[in-house]
Image (cartoon, rainbow, N blue to C red):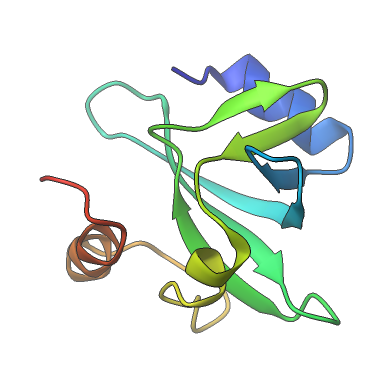
Length: 107
């Protein structure tokens, strides 16, 4: 399970997000905490050629390797994930349900 210290280390070193194989996916830009535990639950990752697209990624199975956040999803999966719309990218209950369904996560 990720800790706030893990997230701080990743963010302070540039926010790299990679696959388990080490392929760079993008940069961690936002972190949403679990209301019950306070731990990191969701993140957003900037992707694309110019880093302008921002996709939601669950952090439940993420880990840290060195200074990078490692997620168990490939580039195609993250690229197809629900995107941040609007300025803040708030994760509403309905959007969280959509992201959970997309990644095949149970409620």
